[in-house]
Length: 83
Image (cartoon, rainbow, N blue to C red):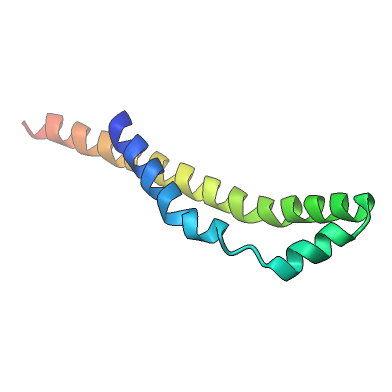
C-alpha cells in the first residue's frame, strides 16, 4: 500500500513538472522591479490564493478515503454475516 502511494506521489509530481516551467518572464521581471514590501505582498497574495483550493482538495481526499474505509468495513461485515 505504501509503495502504491509512493508511486502515485511520484507520478503526480512528474505530471505537474510542466507547470513549473510556465513562469511568465514578464510577470517575474515586474515582480522583481517592485519594492521589498511589494514583493512580500505578492508572496502573501499567492499563499492566500493557494489556500482555498488546497483546503478543498485536502477535504475531498480525506472524505474519499473515509468513505472507502467505511464501505470496506460494511462489505466485510456483510460477508461475515452471509457466511
